[in-house]
Length: 140
Image (cartoon, rainbow, N blue to C red; front, side):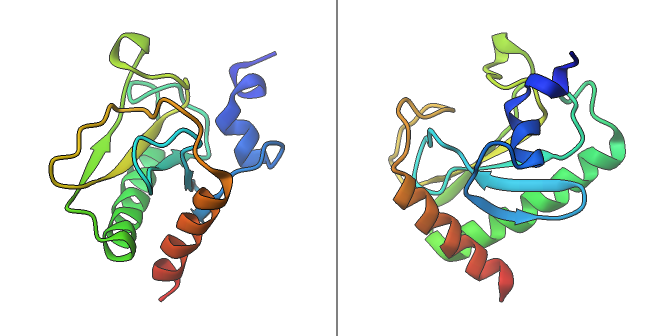
């Protein structure tokens, strides 16, 4: 069994685990973090499995960067945060909890203090509604 077989993000890509999708193209997938650090916390992943920045192919890295910018702009327009935290972790010591390359887009409000990851699961209905709001902006 290889890393892709047990990878939760690969299972989301394959459709065997549900996710509140924001957007998807040939190379990337963006979806709501199930334990958000703040409302609108979105993950952008490469569909190709690579554990981290050190392993991802350049073409996949560039595709994730393009989607990250596109989704960040949509979150900014849809949710009007004061700022956006863009984060990417490599290895457990750096805070990486899923060994599949991904980027966090975390909407932030002035004075807000939050960790890189949420502590509790988000409300599924709220995640669904936020994904829909972001998708609407992307479709405009």
